[in-house]
Length: 280
Image (cartoon, rainbow, N blue to C red; front, side, top):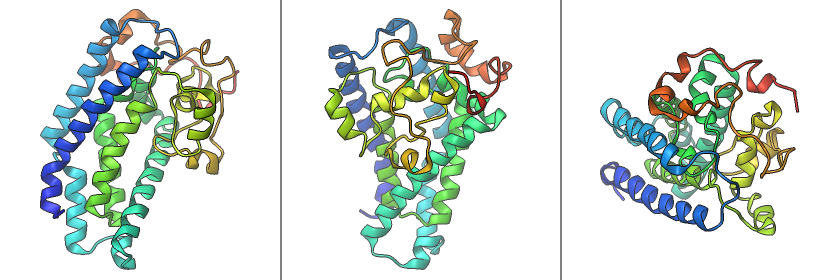
């Protein structure tokens, strides 16, 4: 597909994938819930999805098609590692998709370790329930910062536009899948988490327990957590009883969109940052 057509189809492909996977995961959650929700969907979903809508508006106004655009520019100018190596196209695409996934893994750790970045990312973690809408709940400033980091990686790699399109769609899909409040058979989960980040694997990352929150940073593939020692198989309290969220942000009003937008201005949660916590 020509690069100009990729730029045109990208937003529609992402939107179509979002709608299809969102509906599929929501139905899965209704048929096979993993945990009992603390708050009803009617109470949480308008605010989580409202934040998503705001994110989309901000990106479309300030940086429409930025990731694909940077990839197109790098291809036209011959910038980046992959252009210097002159690899076959399919190798370059596969390598770029994996490299972008590794970059997102590293970015995720960075957003946990830097206090100002954690304040932004904390908006995602303060959801005291865990379901498909949690995977869409990110502060607009974090979205813009993440986009900037992604564009820098795309430029340095010389990632092909097709690889960027594939990565963007896959990241959108897996973020909803691995935040599902849905049950997989234990045998299926045990096998699948060698290939993909499953909901049970990622749910551990949303624990209020510091050393659990500081694990399982991957979004698409689980290999980086296993390779770099940040993998944790299960929460100590079990999936049904584990507490989800961030200490100090569990009041009923914290689910509101207006609170989510100003939450980074609040003082950090009591105690050290997640990566520093050692309590069980």
